[in-house]
Length: 404
Ligand SMILES: [Mg+2]
Image (cartoon, rainbow, N blue to C red; front, side):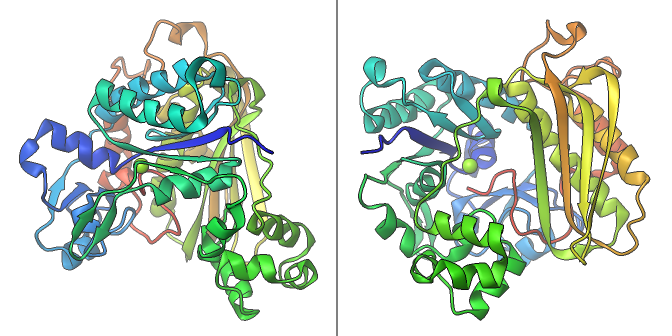
């Protein structure tokens, strides 16, 4: 029997709950972290706001219409980072095999931790308690045999926004051996990684709506609809076959993030805003793993599915948001984007330890040696690229910053 060695830990409404610690009058109210202006975007919404349909990455205008009583709070990323660092230290105390996904989210492989810390379920509860003791915030933990199942399990453990109010979650959800298929089958098929809007359309056209539908369809039919590699991959996922390992730092060759847009994007400034968000995600992951990259690469997929990549290699490795974003923006400037952009990706490769000038600095705190100030990098970026740099003003399939 395969051991349940994978945990997915995800803080509950992270940014909102941090803001509530600073200002307790926000407790119980519908709260939106994000810009209030017409170009503002929801970075995170409290469960009270989610009950009315507010979601992260939604434009603030739409959020205000859905939830006129929402209290808007400006985001404070340097604070979120500090707390994130303490949470990640708790992860690292349990296992060296930690793959940070976002400030508030990580996969842990606890296969080697049972002797010291007990069963998978015990470790999950202990982590939840330790995190609460350390930073006073709740998280949800999914326990399963694979990353896919663990991620869906942490969602199942979360509090739920209902019209009647916030329903507390179970906190920990375990997908025990033997129940993988029954757990998976009722999820909508878009819960699987790799199912974007185009794939979803194709699957729906052959009558597939749930993961269970997909699992029960013959692989040949799925391959005919999606092509061999994508079809086989998704068909396998629908049966719970997900062999991806937790990528701790020693296995990393690149750190990248990408976003498929719900609608093709033609506006260059929106793409530059997206670069900031991607650079934020990439730099956060790089620094939480003590890594920096010498090569910056961007990937653009066009509406006709053709794609182009562009990269540049630097003398010194970089890991800060501002350095990665600056270089990626320069690369983007060299591309003809008039045909529109369907997907934008950003990554760093040629990974190694950060340069010597950075070694004395906080491994997760924002650094900007060129600006001379540790905490001003984000503000500098916002100044340079405008307020919208905090988040793009167009609909996205998935917000990578704080969707749960
Ligand atoms: Mg979260």
